Image (tube, rainbow, N blue to C red; front, side):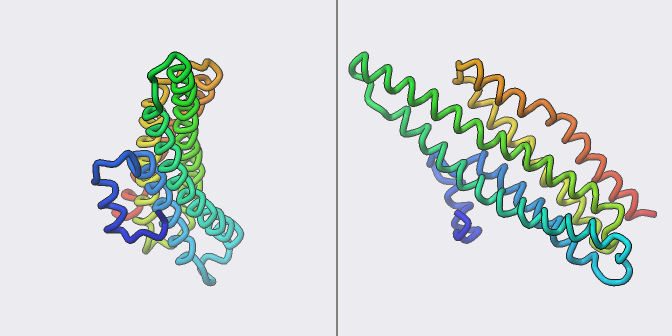
Length: 206
């Protein structure tokens, strides 16, 4: 996926195929958020920002790591969703086949839920970087901090829905609890992202 052109990816996204879909899109929202944070950090160098160089360097390096992780999660999401489709396509002519198919579907749905759950956690991490960078970063590119916060918001919100749709078909109590727990902070994350954007807008019009 990461070697596709943008047009190729969007064509795949628009096609009647199981993946890529919303889960991969959520991860790519996170990748864009991380890239925007990295860009602002790189513009926040020189003597003007010398007092914050350690924080800015740490934010830059962490954002680069997050961007690569987000791309990996986008590819993982496409793979696990493909496994869900394969499980549903398994034969079910006999009781043994039906049992095997049900077990395969259950396992595939759990893995399909775990990837967007990781995207939620990653979006939270990236938003934290944007929150650290906003007050100390280069004000000429501060609008990109808001763009990063909004992209992280979209990543978390989209990933949450993708976890929830998989939860519908999961009956294992442990897996359900694991995935539900991964979503507990999403509402707070959305509020935090909105606060970053509001703070940026206020900073712009001063």
